[in-house]
Every structure is written in structure tokens, then in C-alpha cells.
Image (cartoon, rainbow, N blue to C red; front, side, top):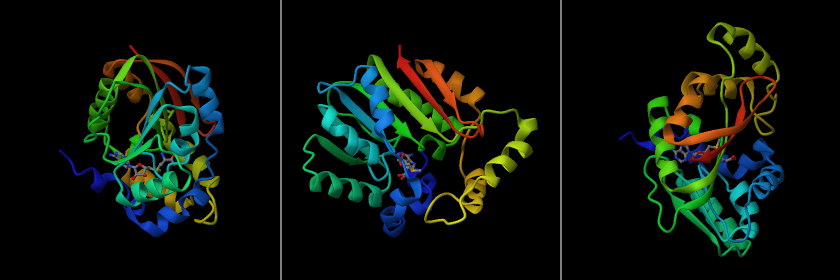
Length: 227
Ligand SMILES: C[S@@+](CC[C@H](N)C(=O)[O-])C[C@H]1O[C@@H](n2cnc3c(N)ncnc32)[C@H](O)[C@@H]1O
């Protein structure tokens, strides 16, 4: 098995980067929470957030759920989420250090899996294993809400797509992802083509019910049902 920490992005292991992460991300989880509520998330639901990072989504969704399991491979991220959950008095959030390939679920199968901007840390072979492991802990009919940096274009279009993406990058690394951040992502991480991910999802036992692709074609969201 690979060492998932070795793939996790070295910055995600640094407490200083973790402390500044939310400002760089600027992620508002409310739209995702409402989308999941429309698909049945309620106070009886169990939700697994895999690669939860600083816990922006997990902590925000917790008051709407029975049980939230927030998992991340980075000890610095896990420490941050655990402290934030305690500070907010969220007793239904379990914070666990683990990964797509190593987390062992305890308890009944879950109703929802949320994973945002994390699957691209694994090469495709391991993505397929990871998706199968997620499916194995989900109820039939459960939802997988997958957001990630994904490439919705043909290999022949790479130059034009990358030029457009890089042109829109942030100037200040504290405020967003710079050209250098994006270049590092492309060189060293494992965003995959949507047309490769989709059969992986199907093979793992998911039906993609709808998908949204960002206009730059470098980001997508899949709403999938576990069959
Ligand atoms: C870009 S951050 C996204 C965090 C959060 N989901 C968000 O939306 O802000 C990627 C996260 O995935 C975690 N990660 C990387 N590889 C992982 C793995 N194999 N299993 C679980 N988490 C992983 C990193 O530690 C980091 O917290």
C-alpha cells in the first residue's frame, strides 16, 4: 500500500498552512448542504466527509445530521477540526486520522459521503480502490457528493485549457491559488479526466445522477447514488 501521507500534499501537513487555509479557499458550504438536504439529509443521517481538511463542510453540516465522521490523512488538519468541533460544542462530529485507502468505518453504513478537493491526491489506480472502499461503507441509495479538480477536456486541448486556467489564478497566495500553485498541482498531483473518472464511478457501484463542470473545464461536481 502507498503511504497516503506521501501523496497528501506537503502543505496540508504544515500547521501554519492549515491555519491560513480557509482564507485561501474561501469555501461557503451552504449550497452543498442545501443540495444534500434536497436529497434527504436530515437529523437521522450519517455523513462521512473524506479528506475533510479544516472541516468547513463537516462542521457546518453537523447540526443537520445525527452523526458526522470527518476523516483526513493529515494530523495537522485533524487537530484543527477536532479543536474547532470542541469549541463549537459539536458532540456528533467524530474526527479521525485516516485516508481513502486506510480508514476503517465503524457502525452502520452511511447515508452520505462528501469529498471535496481530495480524491486528486491519489493516482488513478488508487482512486478506483478508494471509490470501491467508499461504496462499501454506504447504504444502497446513499449519495456520494464528489467535488474535485478534474479535467473535462480532450488531451489535444490541454494547452488552451491550461492557459485559460492559469490566466485566472490569484496573485496573492494568501487569497487564492496562484499560477505556481496550479502548476504544482498539474505537475505533481493526479487530477484525472472526467471521461476516465466516470467509468471508475460506475465500476465502483455508483450511478452519476448529475454533474456540473466549471466553465474553465478544470473542476467538476458529481452527485452519485450508490446502487
Ligand atoms: C485541498 S484539501 C481539501 C480539504 C477540504 N475537503 C476542503 O474542501 O476544503 C485536500 C485534503 O485532502 C487530504 N488528503 C490528501 N490525501 C488524502 C487521502 N489519501 N485520504 C484522506 N485525505 C487526504 C489533505 O490532507 C487535505 O486536507
